[in-house]
Image 1 (cartoon, rainbow, N blue to C red):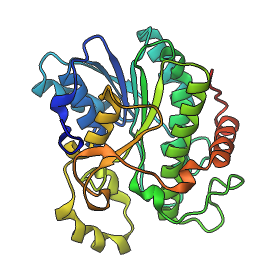
Image 2 (image 1 turned 30 degrees about the horizontal axis):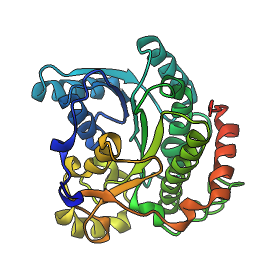
Image 3 (image 1 turned 135 degrees about the horizontal axis):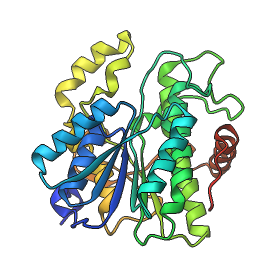
Image 4 (image 1 turned 45 degrees about the vertical axis):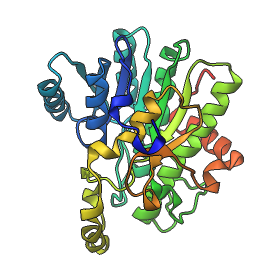
Length: 305
């Protein structure tokens, strides 16, 4: 089958595989979890709101009656919650095959996480950095295990990336902060893959982006941008289509560590999932390593790779 036509029919049976999906109560995360469950994976919905997580679990079960789906409390804006979630998952599972770092916030007003991190970088990057680091020991010995982190075309936004000021406190701009967090997702993925390769790990790290997808993520879009959003809304694809790049990165046997998937349409705005390219800044090895060290310092989490 050609790249342009890859779809969920290409996902092989996942019986016996354990998948953890963050932010799986709605949008891209829910659709990703739904398809993994439909292919018989054991799926954990790692969500901040347990009530919404249970609603999502019931939604999946309604269409996949035999789905093996559970809910795990996880607030990526709290290192304490991240550590508790990791401990819970270590008690429940001896191994994890797939971690999908999907959860995120976008264009939020200036605010901080429970640990004082700028909210968008704190949730989108630092939270996932810590969560991955605390779970990766359950993955390193598992053949075919993968870590997929969801970035965005917004990583190409013209935003500064000063490692000495990750909070962007010098003139906070919510759009630039989001772009900074999304390039951080890619810097993290590429540096993680380098370390996994150097350590001879069985686990690989990949990234994906959904293009222009109609989800709840845009609820904090600034007023000045809402009119633009209304113009483009008719051209946006569904959350189910937006989840396909993530699903391909997570399940395609031909996928390789360090690859990045997105839609094949004009401007990568919509379409079927194919390999795409991220910007030059995301491939800056000095910046990758600098962000990694800063992330270790800020979160107190180190990786065994």
